[in-house]
Length: 207
Image (cartoon, rainbow, N blue to C red; front, top):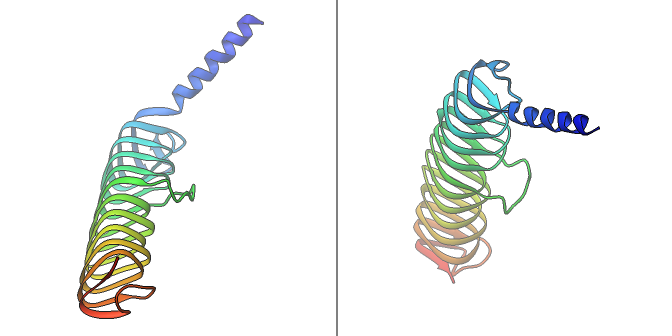
């Protein structure tokens, strides 16, 4: 019985080790080694499209997908994670969508690209279009910024915060659902829920 238990423990340990790889190379999933069931702790190269579980390290490729949490730096045409993102995504399209659907599960770091999309994000988004479906804690800098709740700075031609806002909006057109504390500086400044006035040119706000 003792030998059987020890053998079972050893088998489980080997299985746990086998689920993680230091290196992954992909042409187009499933044409990759090892398979997409593995987590990566180290380096991944995706020549066209690569997919893995959890990722930690340096991720380079045309289309990089992590089905779980991402920690590290992703550089590619398209960077996608379906867990939390802690680090940096640099590419044409950077996408973080937390499938856990937890408002407090904030990703932390930077997204730099043409389109940057995150759920609840703490850090910096720099691009042409920045989107945060829940809340942004930090800076959005683009041609168009869109978020639900904002704690920080939005700078763009068009800034939209449909929920609560604390901080500064700087742009041509600024829109806030509820101004909790902050200022809008722009040509047209709209605060639908409260604030000094529903619409003001140049400066609007509320405290």
